[in-house]
Image (cartoon, rainbow, N blue to C red):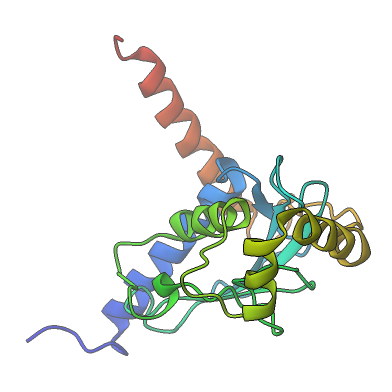
Length: 197
């Protein structure tokens, strides 16, 4: 019989996986993503900054995103919410991007990097089959120029303040983790460079 979701084995496995995702965010983040402004004091709750992707009405915007992992992650998806208003067909008034991968199509194989890349991808190309905001989706379909003007206006109004990412410093509780992440990344990078093409 396997360990129950609340067993120490599951909890340690869950923490290892989340820590690994945090390490990659520090040293090799997905495109347009980076660490949040505050130090991570709770492994199950951290912030990510999404910089508005080039070629979208969100370009130039800085979007802090709240990431809350379930106690039994990866068996349940993390809750990810934008902390600023975003004019987008797939983002509700609470800042949650409503995608099937956060609900019915969730798979434990999905990593935080995959989720963040999915969010960035949907900023580029909204999923209009299942919009959470019908009015915005309708405007996107009927008058994309007006949609882009409104989205740019919201980006300037709500997401124009620059946000600096926080990286652990010597003396922080995460300093050793940060050093380990950098060392591991250097080893992986060297291995890739030394492989024949």
